[in-house]
Each structure stands twice: as C-alpha cells, then as structure tokens.
Image (cartoon, rainbow, N blue to C red; front, side):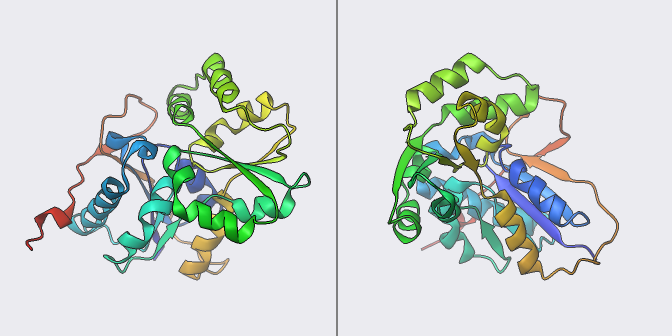
Length: 262
C-alpha cells in the first residue's frame, strides 16, 4: 500500500515542494491542503498559525484520511509552530526551513541573503539557523508579502505583472555583494525565473525543495522498487479558488483546543 503524504501551506506555494517530493516518490498518495482563508501566513500571529495547524490535525482525524506523513511546506509555519503541533499528533511532520546552511557553504563572496516573509525573517528559529550555520559570513535579511501575492496570481493565471515585481525587488534593494539568495518562502520559487532575470543571473537562487523530498523519503523508509497504483492528487482549501486550474474541495478548519475546558 502506497504512503499517504499531505502537503500543507497557506496558499499554492507549497506545490513547489510537492513537485520535488512527487519526483522522488511518484507512486505515493498525495493530498495538498491550502489555508488560503488566512493567506499570507507571513502576516499572521504565531498563535493563529498554531491554531490553524491544530485544526489541520483535527480535520485529518475527522475525515479519517489515514495520513502517513505531513509536510508543512511553509517556512513561516515551520519556523513558528512546528514544535507545538508535533506535541498533539503521532503523525510524522516535516517542516521547511530556509536553506541557510547550504547557502553558507557555496557562497564565494561570503555574503548571502534571505528573502522571506516578515514572520520568517523575524523568527528566533531563523536567527538560530544563521548563528549556527552562517556565523562566519554576512547574512542580509529581506522580507516581502507582495511577492506572495504575485506568485499566487502567476500560478493561477500565468500572468505576472513585471512592473510590480520589479518595483518590489527595487524596494528590497538586495545588496550587490550577495551571490546566493535563499528563497525562504515556498511561494517564491514560482517566481524564480523572473527574479533571476531581474538579477541577470548574477545571484544564485536557493530553496529547500530537494532537501525536503530527501527527508520525506528517508522518514518513510522507501526502497527504490516500491511502487503501486498511482492515485489522483486531492486538493483542499479553506476559501474559494477563483480558477478552473485545480479541482479543489473547500473545507473549514476548527481549532480543537478552543473546545478544551480548563
């Protein structure tokens, strides 16, 4: 029987991670859950994100989805809520964290950048990553919510407002000494090519997708010859998707902790 892997994000950005996992484990059963009612997570509080992830665990139980592993394909949720959610479920959870370590290992200029949401940039977890893996180099931090919106629109419509993209990148004013830019939001790889074009390919863009796929395969302990009948990918969302690109089931998340009596 093939493993059931659920990938979760605030929006469509986690599909960039999902693609890597599907390439590594093509015959698994996949569900993709987007909490787009609260998109973007970078603008939400830590407690709100924890509550939504608790609601996800409850949804999986209520629907008897028999999920074998959850991937929180959202840097903001992973850096702010992962440890809290792991305490309420036995389902293995893989988080996504900014690729600070590999960026620090490959930089030639000894100056890297992290481009993420405000919440990820401000996270104590991110600060710890930098101190542990990039203490000998310079790391500049840049935050954007606008890029999340542009990525969502681009995914569903294939239209990208280049003027808005360039205006946002101009506002960020990425230091010219940076030679590796970590895409610390899973939405941002959707914009990887136009971002690379903006920098005229002088900056290497790095994300965590391949590393997450490797981690998932390791946790599930899959051998290369394990296969099975490939099942259709199921999409869930907490708000309307104004696109006919995906067949999405709209659902509601309830935080089970709100029903606790103390």
